Length: 171
Image 1 (cartoon, rainbow, N blue to C red):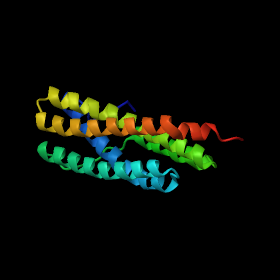
Image 2 (cartoon, helix red, strand yellow):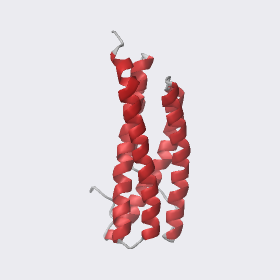
Image 3 (cartoon, rainbow, N blue to C red):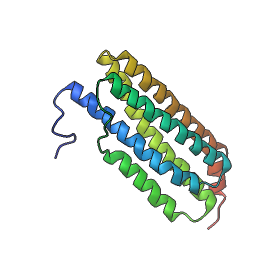
Image 4 (cartoon, rainbow, N blue to C red):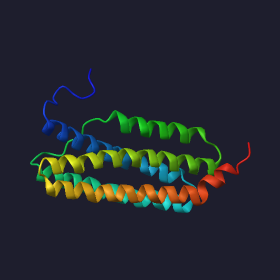
């Protein structure tokens, strides 16, 4: 089996596959975030996850608009990458007993998700522009900007307090 499914023969096919990939990924993220919200003990982290859940729901709606613009039915393509990132986050979170260390682990896991999304949306912006799909490109760019802002917030939260709290934990 190759890197991509057999039905990708053209740049258009590749673009649609990427769209279906991120659609699936966003849906998986909406399933994972409530668990992260529940596990987070830092109030700001929990609030950030809650805000990102609302944003993700809006991003899914934006993707549905893209499908409509593209004349396609919304459809997801299973994405082993996001499944793996979420699985790893669940495993790590399940292994951490100290709340401060857990919050640092959850932040790192959330950033792995953000980085995946940033890479996917960055590609979609570029490809949509290449294909002359300016309306779709603008919608992707809006989401890309949100993902970058979330990543920045997570970095700020981690470096301003969460990492130091986790480091202070003694075995």
